[in-house]
Amino acid sequence: MSVRTTSNLDLNDAGRLLEGARSRSAEIGVPMCIAITDAAGNLIAFERMDGGKITSITIAIDKAYTAAAAKKATHEYGAASQPGAPAYGINSAIGGRLMVVGGGLPVTVSGEVVGAVGVSSGTPDQDREVAQAALDHFGRT
Image (cartoon, rainbow, N blue to C red; front, side):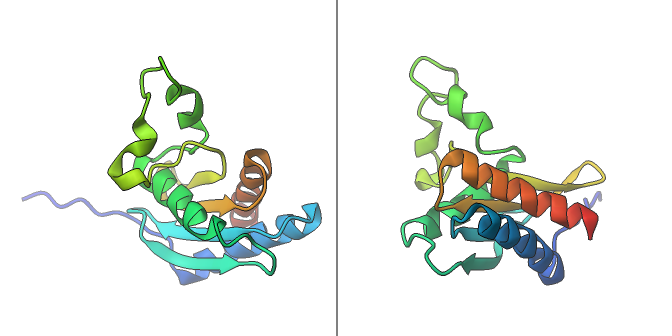
């Protein structure tokens, strides 16, 4: 019998990621919805900053879910999901949860995906910037 062991983020890790995202969001002046998942895409923590868009709650959660489950950044699906591209229509997969716009990034430790962060309420570039700030902060603390 072979059993594979995986590592996951915990609540403390999620708090550090939220802190990094919240800080960058405040710096750019865009209140965000921020979701942190474990390696399987299950929600660990969520924060909707004052002023974060109500519509962005589900989007942030699904961005984190996509980044964790697919083990890749959501923006990487952008070009591949356009008409005529190899993954056209993939955004309708898994009940529409698969996100193809920036703002979802996997969290890796020693080359292994251990969770993900999903951010929404700004432009895709702003969401991606805030998600990256979460990863940068996590790596420093």
